[in-house]
Length: 390
Figure 1 (cartoon, rainbow, N blue to C red):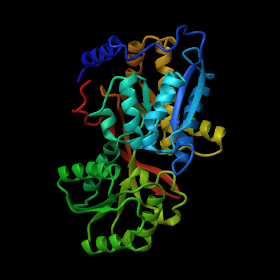
Figure 2 (figure 1 turned 120 degrees about the vertical axis):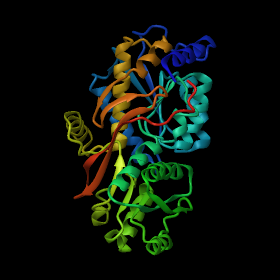
Figure 3 (figure 1 turned 135 degrees about the vertical axis):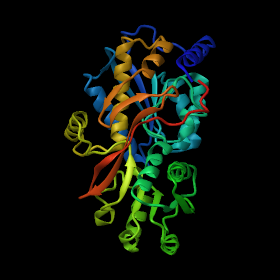
Figure 4 (figure 1 turned 180 degrees about the vertical axis):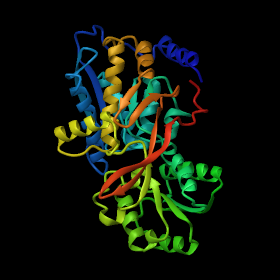
């Protein structure tokens, strides 16, 4: 891909009337940010953290974007894919938002992307990790400020091999997100010369792991790589430690295995290594300032979800400054978004031609209930996007 093709795609949407001007006089109306995030149910904490990070970024701009006031329109996605097209349409056509920010859940993202294609609404994904959003289903008006499942798991494959592991068992839930994650690890590990002795798929969302742990013990691998998240991640890490496997077979995983749960794991999580694009202990001025500001504002330390929301706000601030607050010229606005360079709390961040973040991925280890950075697992990793036709 190249910028000529990208600009042509944007221009064709404008010529077809798909990207419509939303505000007639840029200085008279506030910028409307439509937040389609989970504010109830299992993923509530993630939606709230993203919202908190976003609002902190806007507050640091004195509540303005490109010199204009900001209005937040919050809509509960309920993490329900079937409601995603209707909810997205409500924000775009009913509330006339300038930007849609969401979702958390990849299934919801699929429904949102259909409406984004139909309407040309500028959409920024602050979490959902399905790779297709910035590959097969990429489009000029869709950006991601988070990650893909592959981007966080691929670096761990090389790390595992470099640590001396040659035979590994992978285990995850039998669903798209989990399989996409372990595929990244397996690709890098086998490319380096390692062997996957068994891939175990657990029915989703079961947290009954005992029989699988017995199977792992009988296989005697050098290490185990896993993707589980939320309560499932907590259960697996605890059960793995209780089984005694942790003492002889190191547990490796995607960062979401322990993200947001490091303290809740108590001693079971100590020593578990994961790869992710953020850790609260990153030693940089940008991260120290962010952690302090977030803690002062919300009384807690930020996590990956919070930094993704924050970077979404900083991305908007930089792009809106570049276009002097003008949201009528969609081509110029999309171009400004694509050229954003952030000195993020997570490290330097730019965007590929498919609008996916190019970012660092860190090797983290839980010590005393915190994700301590052990090393830089991969510097400025760009995801494969050969299927993107921008």
